[in-house]
Image (cartoon, rainbow, N blue to C red; front, side):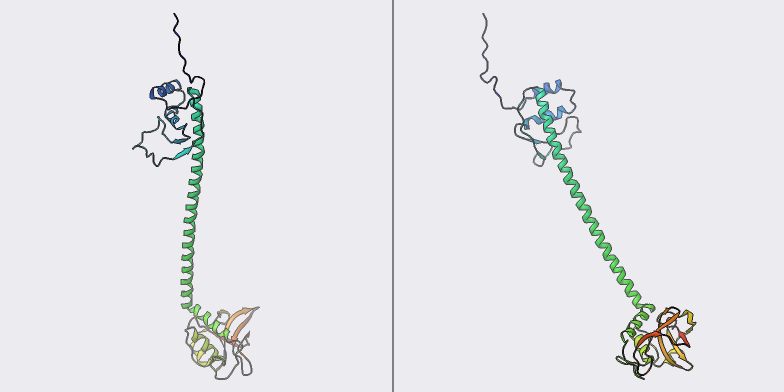
Length: 270
């Protein structure tokens, strides 16, 4: 007498995926032992139906020092997968899930690299600003030191004398709007902190003489014995000495080629 076997009413219809029990998972894992990472990944199957995955370490990874913090774990959006009952289909589902994880990992790595590049750029900008500030401070200190030096004072005197170009020559005048020759030199060098006697004869006596071919910018040029005129040496042009002076009555302070017969007195050695 044959015994009839009742068939479940749901045969042939799709069923919702259920979390496999431990014995089933172990059986599947044993049958697919050739897949090295399956033992760790098979436990991900329970998240497939929900459409999300919480990262779980592989079984062959080093044991964690403490329990994972599930609240802070990275949740990766996964595709909705069809529930499968066969190990092969489950493995296919897991591979799809792995690809979704890899996409998220690449995005996270790109974001990390962008943040690191931004951090390095900020550090570089800060260092550049600090270097610029130091360079500006150094330049200011050097300018201050130069202004306090003898050459700085001489340049200041030349600048002050140049500002008087066009002012009339008046015998005995010492500025600020009219000058005679020694009045101009005394006025300009006094403004730079270098004191000179009042008249050209005394100025020549106060400065050490130097050979004409060794004269330097800012040194004084004298004429006569006894001395009767003084000017400020500026530069050489085509073998000709150029001076700044107050020439004579009826003229004004100006630059021009030096007259013949001059000799030099050194401001630097005074």
